[in-house]
Amino acid sequence: MPPAVVRVAEIVDPEQSRHVREARAGSTDAYELVVRGVIGWAYRVASAIVGSEHAAADATQNALVAAWRELPQLREPEGFEPWFRRILVNECRMQLRRDGQSRETPVADDQEALGRLVTSGSAVRAHAIDLLEQAFDRLEPDDRVLVVLHELEGRPLGEIADLLRVPLGTANWRLREARLAMVQGLESLE
Image (cartoon, rainbow, N blue to C red; front, top):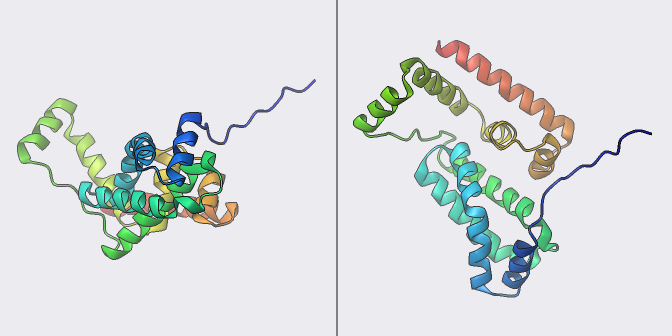
């Protein structure tokens, strides 16, 4: 007898679903609890896509405000996170387009940067990270979204395709092209 296959698309927190239902009914206190549950990963995703702390904070805040406004239209409270992720990604894409598609590279204090280099023990590693960031910065906004969600967040390609509202084959092709563009970008930078 073949083994059973179990697929889990998203783990749903029953408390979060209850808070989403209450927030849909107009409870700002419940929405605050929902925000506390998503703000950490939302900011990380936004930061990886747009590049700067300020732009990531703006994108996250704008997405949270948009979600609050649109919350009454959310049909299934259990689907809040994927629904909100779509709002967040769209906000990041708009932020990149408004900013001319260039990620701002955060500039650290020289002493702080030097301390990180010494702590890491390798200027080579810092240089490699810098090259990766430069190659990533050359990607189109939608390609950045694909790379961040798939490579950094570990999201399955099917979920990303749904999020971007493109066929799975298109998402797969664009991810492959984004990876190739990063490799070519790295080669041109070295």
